[in-house]
Length: 513
Image (cartoon, rainbow, N blue to C red; front, side, top):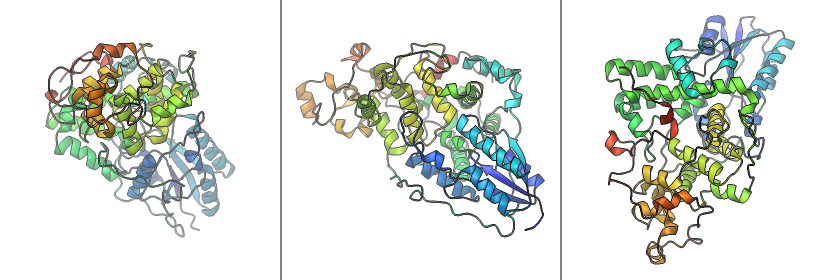
């Protein structure tokens, strides 16, 4: 084997060539590069508390597509530290093993084991930070322990005292593999003991994994359709592809850089328009940053039942209620529609996620970790810190200034699916019920249900729980006749935004243009 310098780049959630500090550093410091992705069996076992599969079929398909798109060296089911150890034995001139740093305990344990292997074999380790919009070293706080526990304080400090770093250049071509080393085979879903999911034509995310697809999506959403210019008005949509950016799955796997999105927004604002919608994309990226840094600050408390506030809540662990929730059989149509969309496509809107989380926690009183682990299993865009941070937020034991916040499922359905189109799309048993009545089938007369071919308890379940606040909306029709939001442009296509729900709670100033 040649004595030339070889760098092993251990890839994880950084599956891209553009704005990739790891590959940029390797290009400058190696004659040969070994890009390595390990299909670690620890990613496919049961979750810690409820033994749900960690990686579901939709995210696995997206991951495999992303790796094929990058065309890096693959590996079969082996732990990262084991693969690195084998390569160090096989290649006698590896100078460095390099990787991007992660945040949470399982990933940090892998990093420690890789470092231990390298120390034993006297090989250097080089690490980078590259998953956030703002670099960790550029935060306006003397130490991560001083990170504010309220998002607004973090956002204002970051916006006024930090800067987004420039992009790393995209290599035209990576340095070659060492002689004698061939690209590894990329496994199939069957190799990983999973079934290939069936595409659903109703999906709001009919997209493929990979850097090229991520960049194409940004081009479409920004430059081809100008959909970004109305993002703040359409982001609470439920049906269609373009009501929101849909960047999250590619961000979660590192197929697109948050800094790249930021700089594209800057260019769009210079060349086309700057408004609250263009700013709101950055606002969402800052939420993602915030949860990541909260994970750094609090570590494993992100996963503990008492949350960040170390607060005891007598959560229930009723598996019958949980199964009804996860299968979309609660008898509450707006909840069921969202849960079925998740089960059938691996995707759910932000509006839906807030509602089903509130329902599981506030209406059913179940352990919030049941919902978090179910989302971890099914979501294509699962990001550890964002997922668990949002569930803690919903449970009132995270970064949340309002502990008793609860969504009214009926009001939410009437506000954001006022014609019932979304419910009928995903709950076909109720297609015979017209208009907004579909949100409360239990309030209809026997004759009306019979006419709609609905039999509660037989063709569709009766509600497993009811809340007293729902009664305020019986026989109350939604105002106006506008259609439900479907990603169309213009505020007239979207229900009125409510300052008392979601991230609107935090936004209290207009963007200075």
